[in-house]
Image (tube, rainbow, N blue to C red):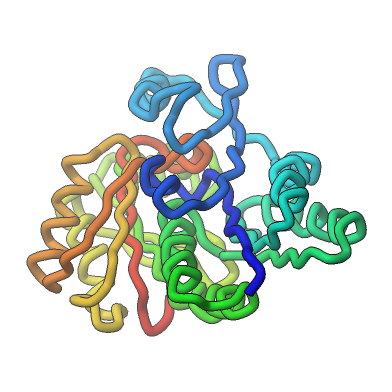
Length: 290
């Protein structure tokens, strides 16, 4: 069976060490803060994740950059030159043009490397939701599944990959147009926290609210109880916007309620954190539906 490589982008928010262990190639997306552009590497080599969130807390605003076809081609071409086929698992088309740019790059490179296979999957996922799909795809690859079989697995699995999250400060969602200024003002005054998820089109959708931070964290685990398939046997991912203690509380609730043995925590990277802000906590697992 011909060898192939799984590529993704840095909005997958995998820990750098895990990315290396999984042997995936990761395209760093970019963002700007304080007038300087940074590449969002998984290891935070250009700006630390805590440092990034401290700047956001101090009032700095971060702007993300649209990835282009040339960036994807630069990441794909060396692998094609090595004779590898490619499976690209890209950031949700509902939030970014990352998938579309990857598709354009794949189309261009297929003409230049007609003997190579290049498939691009719109994960309709973000942060460690995308990361969890990458993790599961690598598991299938290591079990001996072919490129086409892993591609089909990713397509069949992505709409069962549940994203449930809450934020501590509604003003960041207001700036991104996710909630209205009135909702942000009233919610902040009353201590109301949104409970949100990713829908089947890869958009962030507000589903409910909770009164206070503890209730909003518990609401994520309650959603898992309603939707998860055999949660005890699952690997669960949790990402956070520089609030590891709150993410840890969710992890403990998940372990206690469902008996999950593997729960992995990591930062929401700057590309997504620019929009969600500090205090975000997101829970990712496999469910009957999103």
